[in-house]
Length: 580
Image 1 (spheres, rainbow, N blue to C red):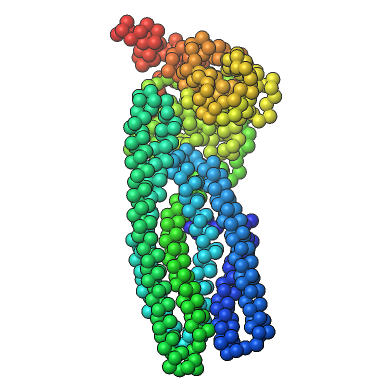
Image 2: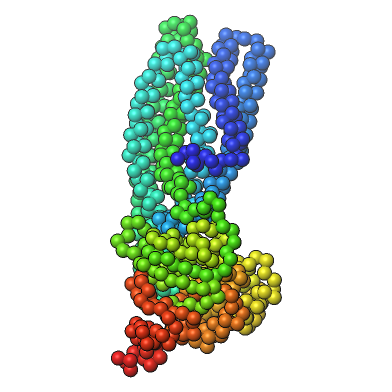
């Protein structure tokens, strides 16, 4: 898991290594300063000449400045390395998500992915910063200080034999109690972010049903759960401070009491005032190092859950892969379903599609009708290989879709959904998602074909009109027509409309279909619709029922042979009461 994460370090390896070297230098100098300070105190006590005192004092000043430089430089390089690491990690996750198929995305909720790219990465960044700075500094400081304390203090160093085990045991107990609460917080972050996302996306529904108070209570409950867990964990971690103070003051009292007695009884022959001052400093360094190690332990263990969640995304294998030698050109828009069965997951109880055999010639217009859950959308999602079939095969231009390069295949298939998405930016920017190099003339031609040009020009800024995120400042019908125009700019071999004219009136729907017939005759057009009028003049109409093809044929043929189709037509043309 750590190896996976560190791949994102890349160009920031040098500042990370430089940080480690600077920290080692800082620790080495800081450990030497008490040694020279003790020597200075003893020389002053012994009545040394001023020149000797000044020389040693100058050395101490230079050491302090050098330590300060190493610490400051380590802070700069460490910040650069950790911020760069987080940027690369965030970019790697985002690029990985872009490679996911729908099957992969179904495994992670969108709110969880947002949490992983924000909160989790922040924790990992903090842990990385602590690892290259404090996690190196604290153990080295502990080791060097203990060695120097025993070298200088002799029997006085026995205090650390008592204090260190007590402090270590206490810190481990504190960390053990706090960690479960910290781990639980991340799952609750997901639920809180999900609440926020649902509320923002469904704001119109919330206000339409006057459910603001309910949503506030739901969010407050999720937020309060996080507060409780953090309060509990932080309350336990706060015990570090009194434990540290207890050990520190015990150490000071022991050294001062025992050291003073040794000086008086031995008259400074075994230990002197300088050694006592050094022992107090080393004691403080040892205990502070242990304190820092405990905090690192808590932080790294907290971050372990974040690392695991991030690694889950980075190690996820895209369900759809390019073949070894992919086809890079789609010759035409013919589509064949050869005994296709499909289910969304291997553990699903039933197929979404079963035994589908279908041939669509290039340039044909095909209508698909059926009730909710009949498998219409599942059928068309297999053509651009958004999912792979469970059994059988889907062919485009005579080749199995699994033989194509994914990008090439999807570039040849344009799908317009009922609830398609517009992005924040101008209308022109949104249209050029279909073709970044499209000229203004091509934009206008596509919009005229999609019956969007007139309403675009009714805006004061025309094609430069700003679209809010999600297209909230245009109507549903306008949004659908812009999405159709965007798809047409791809000049696809296959155009799929998944109930994407449901929000436009029948007259506009007819004009759009007429435009398709006249201007893109060679493009295969697959239209999923709820209205019979939208597919009545199609070359063939497919009636779906319970994941199977219940009937197929032209409008005239189906009126004679299909009871389902005839019932739909009668209900929509004569009214349900009269048809009954």
